[in-house]
Length: 639
Ligand code: BES
Ligand code: ZN
Image: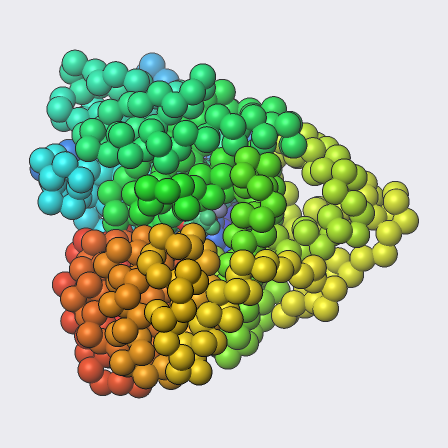
């Protein structure tokens, strides 16, 4: 008898043996004695974070029939997979903490088929192996989610803006979609999808697909995504939402309370889209909308196609954090149109996007602002380089990652984002902006609706740009070596240099409140200037000096969430716990990981027992309000 063996390198030996035994057992018990085809290992999947055998047989379209039950916090449903032509006897899906009820094949005439579930891996979940015939076209998986669905955030009304209705949203990237939909959860397989979703009547559902602008009478919604996307971009949000049109093909879904704030904050979106299209080619997704989620959303934004998911912290009131939208919009090209083949190639998604985001900001606003934003990012990169150098994985400062057997989330550092973007900026400088833009437009067109590995990119870069133009460039050093190459472009800003001077005055013990017209109140400078000021303060500044600054400028109370985050980090480092109430309120309200993780870490690393205890007790109070992504990150060093 031949047994299909999942790719060896994906599994621990123990898992492997158990899975094999399970499969053997199920075949022995099955009345159908058809042989399951052998896999000699040569068809091993090249995504270390998926069990799927997508090289042999793959989903082309999935239709979701789902019932969203807020009372039980469970999604009940069927995932109907339309699969490719194949010559294998089994298809493997990824699942994590799902309850599989039954699996059938066929469209109108369904027949139950045998399935086996491999052992649980705490990171990857389980392989779901379904027996098929060479002529099977449809595989229907009947399932329900469980309380351990890591993608899902079920919020009680208290954690929403309106405080009257519950909310649900999903977060799929990187490998969490498998916890709410059984599918081949690898970016290497692009699929179309459709969905019929039943929700409570008083709420509205939106997806990364064609969306309603009105609430339905009966709580039923139908969605279509007709462009091929990777599974991590399938997304759903359900809540008390209302649509505000912002332009011809763009708008925003938000709770009614936030609609006005969205209108002014996002008034430049049409302009951003126009600029982006001018630079890198047509916007391929027809509509561009944003949905504002509750504060627990673990990211500033997430680029779900046609519908960016965003954290309300970006509604700063003065457009100071709107570059997050430029970023998510840019992903409509880098990431969604041209997708990283594995999570080791994550910089292809994020580095390109940060570069592109900055170009949009330069066009829509001006070069001075774009440079200021890039310098803030560079400051983050410098911190990340030091942290990574001192960590268990100093090799993580390479653009090309090796995250096999590790959580792909660990690749979400400023290496992929900022080192990636500076690599592209340095290339731009070497070949000239016009030539580089031409190259990038061709790249997006050439790889549209495909996935790409770092190695394929290098080949394309050499063939289409560097060799063609006879340009020498240290591509391999940038991509495969740790640290930052010495030819990295530098960006400077007089406005930020002034803020460093101002901070140095404080560092030297001078009183800046007496300096007329330089810094009298919070409004005197923009967010990023204050961030630079705060970051440039000494980590051993006396508590009295810190308190005085807070009294004068109100960083902990009046600052926007980005300023507050940097301020609370500095408070933790200097041992300024007088604003602990504000800090606690912030950490309880906001779940955006990058904002809160660095505060918790600074407290935890402070060496001050009172600060450490404060971090732990605050986390205990806050954690039930966080999404799994943020909760699990903090748990690693606080629990
Ligand atoms: N795609 C990312 C968010 C993400 C990355 C989710 C990896 C899960 C795994 C998104 O586009 C992003 O980068 N968001 C940033 C925006 C910022 C860089 C402007 C964020 O949330 O901070
Ligand atoms: Zn991004």
